[in-house]
Length: 208
Image 1 (cartoon, rainbow, N blue to C red):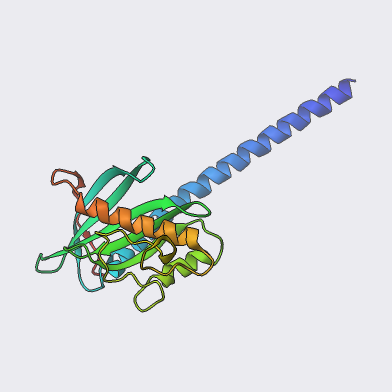
Image 2 (image 1 turned 45 degrees about the horizontal axis):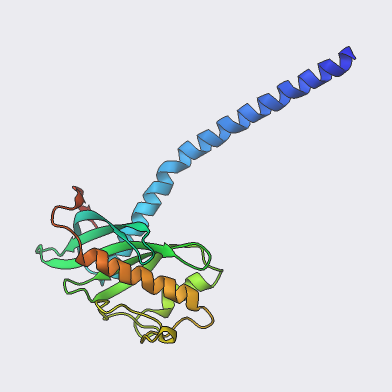
């Protein structure tokens, strides 16, 4: 009986030691990789802003955060990157917009000129069925079947199945609706950006 107690005690001590060591290793790895991951995300965002605003030299002059309710009354947060060119001319803004897709959240970065016309877009994150996310990233680009570039969402963009003028991704109407909702909501956030909005003071150079 004493041997059994001793064995159980040793086993518990060993398992506890292994758990502690594993926890320390994971914490160390997380600490080491945290900064590079954050830096990569920042670079991805900077490249995305430049791409959706049509390329060329630009600077993020101001960052605004806008909160507004979607069609279902859920409050969502939008990040608006106001951009200027080298001569400080207003180029419009890139807007981060998130909505629920078929498989989870769909985060889109949409570029608008000062009049609200769409300059470009890119998907930042998605949890769609493999393949559908990649399709959404291309389907609505200039010259493609669902081309939205140059359009103004003052009149909400909707798929043809819902009476709109945008062709949905083949066999993926739900993802298409979610994507267009994200774009429409981004437009509303951009047009409703308050003058005294919650703003960041950072000026982000995207020339590199």
